[in-house]
View 1 (tube, rainbow, N blue to C red):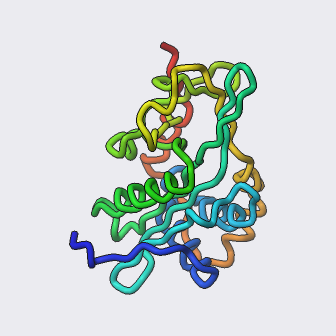
View 2: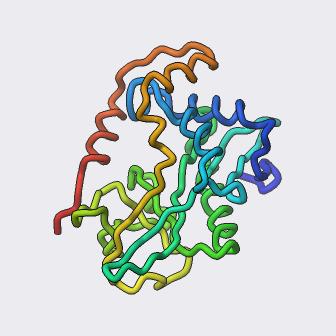
Length: 218
């Protein structure tokens, strides 16, 4: 891929519908029948944790073919010390352009931007197969967990600078930007703004279920 084949820029308000439709195409039937990622993007932009300085799109062939967003989250140690971190997602690449290196480009570009803004840890909840090649590691290796000493297999951690974490136990506190997505009626209502698509089952949904419900116990 030639460096002149694409451009990366900040999302603008004029991009909103195109980006949401892109997310819908990328995630439709992937994790569940249908998807809510386009609605999540819509509500995330309005949330206090959203970071517009890290809201990027990638263009090629004269159109937006990918996007990435970040929001604020926190780690808390057992003494109540709070460390601001980034929550990454969604990361979307249009199906026609997947497996061509664009997600890698977006991640590495925005990692540099995030570091320049003073962030040194990125956390996301996703399929490890998609992220370990970009330097993400299991939360267990950094002693980062959910409340109750739960170490999800899908909770992944990226150090933007080496040895930022010192091995102490941290509890990850995500923001609540995705809570509106639990309202199925609101998601369905918003989805009607887009072209009709059929919900269906596919094997990737079982893969998502396994990853998202698995924990590391040792």
